[in-house]
Length: 267
Image (cartoon, rainbow, N blue to C red; front, side, top):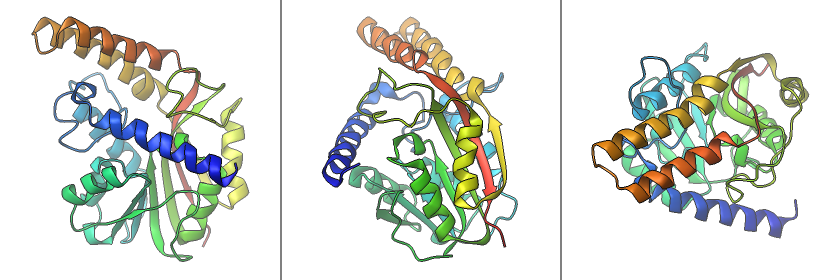
């Protein structure tokens, strides 16, 4: 992608997400206050979105085998993922990157001890062999080159370091959320996706397919919560219809899978 086109895409993406995150109707419960912006992982007993977001982070971070010091959070959003990481790693050893200054400002308030930078995932401005762990939660669908990100993650990881990624893959270009999901990489199957990690040099690659718990769980929760809020008069009919329309757009996305990835850089 040409530099001007890439810059325009990132500006459009930032504008779209910043506007969404400032919209109070997008959030349920304490999800906004906790800094979460991901779909979450819904288990049968999950009763709120904040818990679903915590579930996702705990499942992903649970894949990390050696909880060593220096961590990079790629696409740190509003800081919810970074807060979860800080429960497992020293916050002063955590580095987060994002392409939105607004979102970074939210992160700095939530985790003031951590380090945050305006930076693109496809061209990391960190030295080689710097991090023990790289984490990325639902940011990869917005990267203009997953392979570029994966190569960069490999470069900045120490030998023996681990990469964990929560990613949603598509079988066709989405017709909904075009600003946020423009220029998607299309995959026929998970083996094509696995090849990106293999080509980058990673080993011990594993996938956990959580499509039903994440993508489908999010849409079902959005609808049920909207109905509950309508009945209890927390929202009016117009907001209810907006939320149903939002959920329907998600249901219509051509999703191949929502996967949690773990892999290692060889020693």
